[in-house]
Length: 271
Ligand SMILES: Nc1ncnc2c1ncn2[C@@H]1O[C@H](COP(=O)(O)OP(=O)(O)O)[C@@H](O)[C@H]1O
Ligand SMILES: [Mg+2]
Image 1 (spheres, rainbow, N blue to C red):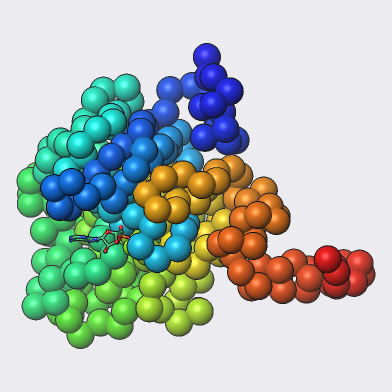
Image 2 (tube, rainbow, N blue to C red; image 1 turned 45 degrees about the horizontal axis):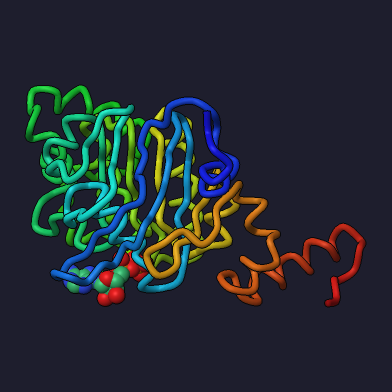
């Protein structure tokens, strides 16, 4: 049974055992300096969960901590109920967790195909079968398999990074700002691709700087601020929460809301 406090922290989360859960995490890079200050997150099977929040809030740190790349000083991470706190990244990959970092996420001097081989070097004999499967999702990568990743556009590199993380057939995928630095059209493609991967059965935690867009595509989202949960709930609910709009979405969301209202013939809202 969930307590009222838990229900608030994970507002709108489904019942049942989460696939991935972070409970009251404290973590940081330097001794004595915590970047995460009691951070909570749950991801249920099949969910697409967003993390938004201002720059420096600790979003990337949270993903890195979940993936064993930043030491967790207190709190607990579980995968299907088994504790995985501070487990090394390579062990996590074996247990079905994949991670796409925000930057430096491809090997520029290697070809697309070689990058994807790097994603499954722990189980190299499955390369052919997995490659064909992923290329079904991203046909461009198959057509250009011999091209070096360094010669690709930002959007294409992001695709390679995602494809590489998918090679080991993860059940949980952690994505750090996949749309950063891309044009609006390429950003949209990234969001569509993320949803497609999610629909194919991969549960996803996505960190996004494009907060409004993230709230549109996610089942639920968490707002992080100074390493702790500020708000959480279904994406649509957060998008319409005046406090969230004021503090984290800025005028952009209000403008969009006004435009929506106008389209529906209600005229713009005035405070
Ligand atoms: N490698 C690092 N060493 C020390 N401090 C870091 C490192 N990476 C990030 N930080 C600090 O951690 C805080 C949170 O950063 P980050 O998790 O990258 O935020 P976000 O992804 O939300 O923008 C920032 O104050 C940042 O300066
Ligand atoms: Mg970040």
